[in-house]
Length: 556
Image 1 (cartoon, helix red, strand yellow):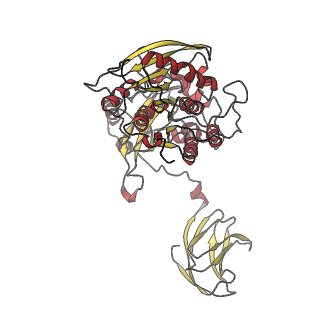
Image 2 (cartoon, rainbow, N blue to C red):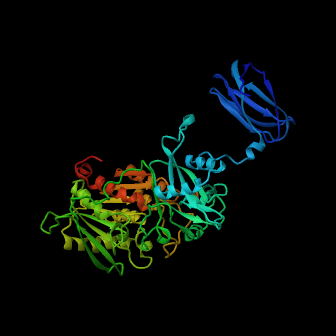
């Protein structure tokens, strides 16, 4: 083991080496051909070939598992037509079957939990009560540095996050519900009980620049890890028995009208120490606030009615130069309504950006969703909805609020289905909507098989919108797109958010569009979107943004 053996290659000559192995042993051999081309073969006790490979001119390995106990022979010979030379061979690893069957040890352990375990094992009285007192004072989860010993590559970009639960005699298990990972690898998100104490914990390695939401499930039902997608009701059943973390003071707003998140009951929040700042969403002293008006808007095209919230910038005047226009979907998530705090504080973001002259003064229309399942019918690439925006809503805004008729000064924005609707509105009516601001747009979408907005064909290729742009001449549109690192498709069908956004980005760039794209470290939630809305507005509407793209004489 570990000792290199030297050999000389010669035509029609084979060198053999002996190994005595047990059934199930894993073997790794390292071979350096020293610029030659060689063949390495492994033969079992019965004389039959077990494994083999061609190597060279660089060094490589031969790996195999012994199917039976007994003597094994390793043959090394030059490949046909190869001149004489030397080589070295070394046994670098053997792992017995019994050792491979042992579950791997936990790679990461919270220093706090490790110290607590040691104190409990030493019989220190009151140590658990003191631990809980400290957690109540400082909150959970615990966020700690990874031990940098042994040149740990994870130490500089990640930290340990330890979720906690104070158990009772009825506690059988506790699960961290973190979409989409918990339903795919449930065992990785179940807490462990610390001895016979009431401390339940789970430690995970998390990028130190991440934002995410989670809930906790006490006595979660058994789940089976599988490569197949989880049944449709798995997440719903888990969520019904979950709750926000009582030890974490950071909770998202509980909003029964939240359009995207299941059951709308709020989530616990974690913002890692190096998460990107979100400076525009907090009210600032001395910054003038815009005015809010609300209207009920009846659509002849859609045959329904909805609220339109209107933001008027500070100093708004009907006699001023026409204002730039922003249209945002999912009003109740982006605008204060009925005293509820919005998921994305858009009014404050606009106040701050305008005050700092990062964007021009803008009138913003926040479009509420229609009744019933109108959101699922109207936002995903519905021509009638795009026409409603173009032929009804925008003309009304121009009559009422002195807004621009220049498409280069109009931004249509939204998240998830709202991002999809924004892109389709620009595609259908580029004469009105010149700028698309899409936050985690649902470009996995394909037209349903029937009249139901939920009747998707599981075999259909995603990226329907991208294909429309491929088939279309280049349009006078500019784009801001973003997506999150956790917005991934674990089923392997190529859907979800992240990959379709990358695909659309590449298609648009190949067609010559101006595209601003970023990926944030997080999931499909407003926690990140409340920051990226400002990013998109600055990139699309900031001083000098798109001047080359808007110059008719500019080269593509």
